[in-house]
Image (cartoon, rainbow, N blue to C red; front, side, top):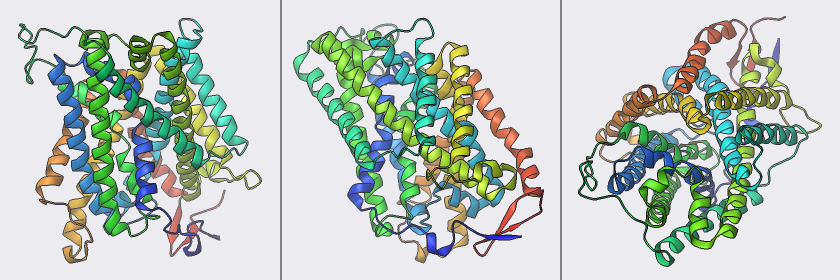
Length: 463
């Protein structure tokens, strides 16, 4: 039996993203709720203020190295599939399947749970629901947003831009206000036994960088715009470099303001640092305002993640008959209803895992980090594979200082993959186990798979 593919030639995305709109999307993905929640965890792994700030500078440099590598991949192989397309072309369908499986069971669903927990932390400042307040709010967020998407509710691009703009504006406002209007907090002894002012003082660099790079996470999503970016060969590098430059500057300003107002020790103990700093600057009213902004930002980010994650699940169901339940599209509501339900159930299970661990945010980071760095490592390695296969004269943009630049980022990916396994808790073990389970699932699914040939799916069998 044969049926037309949804990805046939006539349905390919048209180039519609300009440099400016793409830049807005990348910054909007990266600058989210993480900067309001993760700096205290980074501070907890820092020996002093200098080391704390150096971690954030290193995060920007590392992200830039990765962005230069991704710019070559995206310019030479532009496709709406982004990383999935790179991995499938470099390694074949098994690795492509594992990426989709990982996004469904770990990366996207773990991100949804993480964002929901951050929302829960800030919502609990406004109305505390008891010892499991954050978890209750997180579960409610997943159910609410999944339900809205099942009804066919579309997340407006304009409102997404408004939310993102609000986050950037409030972060700039916090940074400037903290640096200009406050009295500096008491700092650590810069010459104490713990090496107070030393960059190489005893700190947990591997653990700290997991959370720093998670806060920078999302720049790689620019690869998914490559199929729709106007003049991708010229504009992709501008988007990457300018975007990461602006994000790094913003993060440094905000974190310096955190230290200036709160001090390192107070920062370590502040789970809702955005509310804490505005509370110090403007009193209870400021704390309430920033809590509401973070909640709105979390709703926006979580909803966008639910939308994109469900589409990935739908594609998995469309391409693999074993998951055909997720590959059904509700035409009356224009939404992948079954894929949304599966995603919502997995995200709720992860909320339960976070609640059980009593360290919800850290557990969700542990859960997603190893898988994220594993696929980032494979994607970076694919650059060497493509360079070996193709004529370099046909590459529109070449990463500077090849092979040094990709080798440096590859080393970082290896170190972060190791760190995300060695310096994390049970969440990493659970997340890695789910990815490993995907290997036998792939061989099972392949027996009933729809083999893509010339844009038409040839079904391998019937039920």
